[in-house]
Image 1 (tube, rainbow, N blue to C red):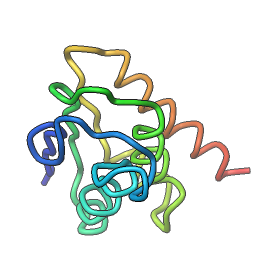
Image 2: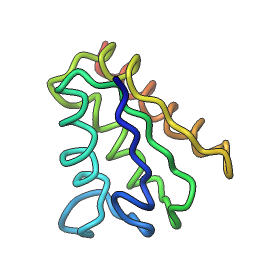
Image 3: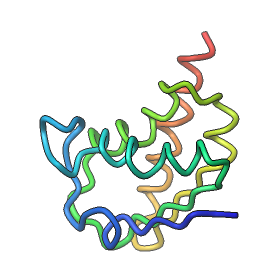
Length: 108
């Protein structure tokens, strides 16, 4: 079963910042409170980025690249997180790049 998370509706329309000290709507908080619990329950996760404004690299890298710095195996993350960004397809590519780069770093 897949958990669908609409970032703008379910978390914040204006997510920003890397850590909780930067913002209550940081990448760290999104990862810890939304992404990790679903993945740990064995769910696939579909994240819809459309509608969220100001998605900076620090938020995206911490939320998604940060998944590869947790105790979850890389294959659990890479094979079970799907990014949807129909309004700006480059966001999907960006997020997938952050995850792949962190997986490669962890593998060395």
